[in-house]
Image 1 (cartoon, rainbow, N blue to C red):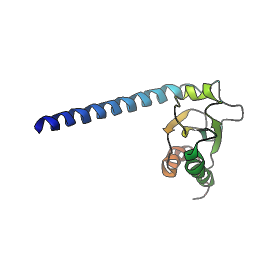
Image 2: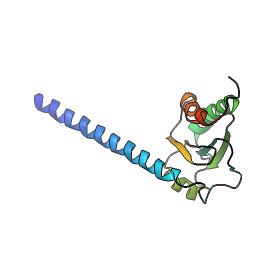
Image 3: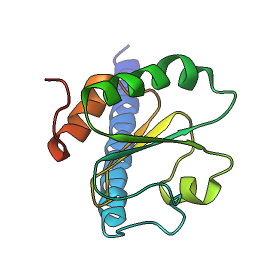
Image 4: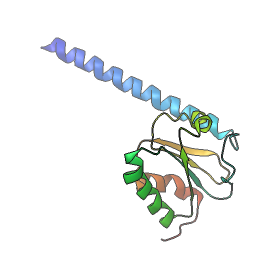
Length: 141
């Protein structure tokens, strides 16, 4: 019985190590992306001056349509932020720059268009608000 607990403990430790390494890799990637002022493949309608959210989705993404889109609409109602909806398939070059492999994914950019955060999967309103709020004025507070 103790052998099973030891195996379980090793498996949990390995999973935690893999997760920690993945988070470290994400932080380093984000830090290196911040050095790039404006990615070459950024759509021309994305302009500097206020925080921006690049919202990567696809036409058949149900989570995007029913969960992430309403959250981003609420975010825009609370904070002065530009949200750009991008098809991850049509914008493959830009998706590759940010390491996007799933939709929905949101990339939060500061007013100088440097990435602040990359969120894979549905991101709650509070988290997005916290990522955008330090760089903007509140609209409805």
